[in-house]
Image (cartoon, rainbow, N blue to C red; front, side):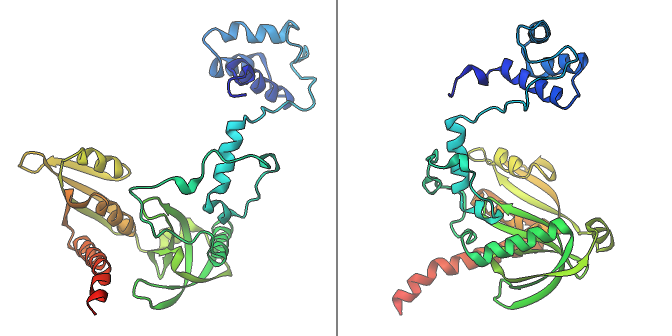
Length: 315
């Protein structure tokens, strides 16, 4: 069914027209507009005429449809296999969704475990852990109902802390394969890694996220200066990676070297740090000193983890 005619433009146009007719919204004007938007160049000279002269007995004279209900486009086997593949993703379980019955007996298009992400860290979040799933669900419900949360977690030093926070939004880092929760705590923006959360409790107090953001201290605007050696298209990749930020690029005075100034919110610093490190030695942070120190600390921790097995062998 990959190339069956029912998946052609004519069928798509007619389906949209019938959907309008079933809702009582179809007029001569809306019919022509639908055909011109979804059809070929001269479809407006064919489809309306066929529907109204009886060649295609799908519309009445008053532009209503005798079809109860309007037929839906069936899924192809390829589409079903793709959906089956999505359901096989471990992150699918985070939303407590049931696999549709129409996918019963369908094999996935490919095994997600066979995909190797060369630019992604291998220590992603434990998506199949039941506690992690429950925490994700509680946070998701809180974001939808705009209720405060009491969250217990362990920080980077392993110290357990309990905060009452205003959850702002949940984000996924493709680079880290981790979910992070952006919150307001004590009038400041903070970012929490979901994998470090040990307990989530929904509080009865509700809030307006816009008012919370207005009354909290405005996130400090920062500017980072990067020195980029343009080898293997590094400059183009950096500009694409940071396309969401305001930036300026100037030559650094030596061939193939550029200075890039990025303007960002301080609460985005963790994500900025991760993305900068992904470019390795081709990108050097010149300022601010806080970001330079964070990168130095991260590299020292990575070096320590790398050398730890060798130290253990000497012992």
